[in-house]
Amino acid sequence: MDRAYSARTLGDLVGLTKDLVAPADQPIRLDARWTVSGIFASEHRSGHWVVPDVLAVTAVFGEVVLDLTSALLQSQRVTIYATLIGGRLELIVPDGIAVRLVPAGSGGAGGTATRAPRPQPAPAPAGVPVVEVRRVVPGGRIKVVTPRPPRRRGGRWPVSRRRRS
Image 1 (cartoon, one colour):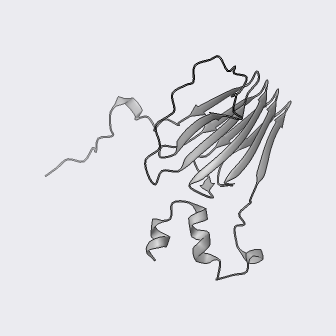
Image 2 (image 1 turned 135 degrees about the vertical axis):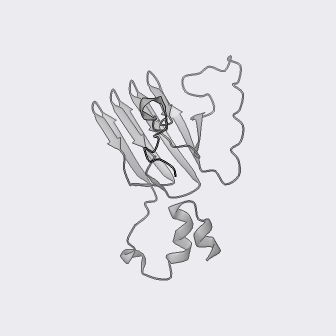
Image 3 (image 1 turned 30 degrees about the vertical axis):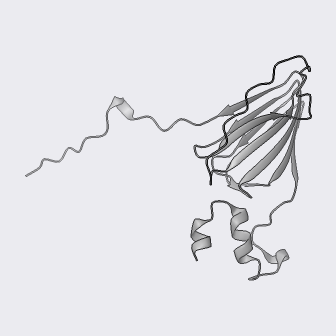
């Protein structure tokens, strides 16, 4: 019971439910690998969707938007292989998920060996899901967005009009 309450991702629950029903009869099937492509077009993933542990994203003169605010993560570590040729990838990530941008390959994305290495990002705290984006971005760009909390109307919190007695 403790494992079910402490589960933070859908992948954590799979081990608890696999003996209840056959894999073909599971209500949510987990993908081992998945692709999203925006080739001369826009592609959006938002709402309640299952994010596999490995995701390939391709944008060739197009745009791919991945909204993870209501998504179900399959595992604590999600790896996105992004290939952007003149395209754009926008990641909308809620608070509590760490994002790391890593150049694909040893030489980086279009980098040369003479450049000084960039400082490594600090490791994410334990228990925090991590989305690692391995990127090849010739002429493309990646934007990571965290949605803002809702604004208060009128600059003040609502006040009850009831009189206290």
